[in-house]
Image (cartoon, rainbow, N blue to C red; front, side, top):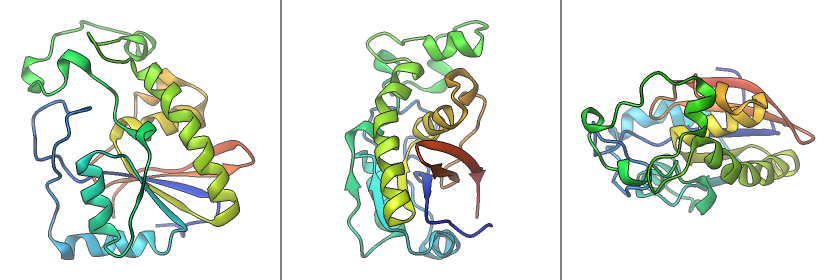
Length: 193
């Protein structure tokens, strides 16, 4: 894996959710953390980051503590997963069939009482821009968050919200963005260690 540069945001998707098989956006469920020995390679890859920031979700806070046991992550409410409204917590098999949607239509789709992916990207973007400025001045910033948060970062880098939905983001994977004076370049997506 390439060495981290000083001007990077490294997004780490939380460990698998304890609510496997269910859509968990704002549901505050625990993480199903792997054994300590399984986290060592990821810890070594992440090395010394200047800042650790986390979504307030329990699964993210638990993952951050497991990766950096001696640090307290800074919490940022803007990094929460997409709000799936009435669909949140449903088993995947019970989700309504939306039919065939283009990526643009899917990005604009708002579940009842929730937010669209496009709205999530708008919510997350100011946080990512602020973290990018920190990374450029202080060094790499690790962000422990959600698949949707990593996709929102990719939408920002690509300047294309719908196309970011094409990316899969696995639990405990890394998505790395280099920050270049307000612009972003994609270093790595969905990397496992």
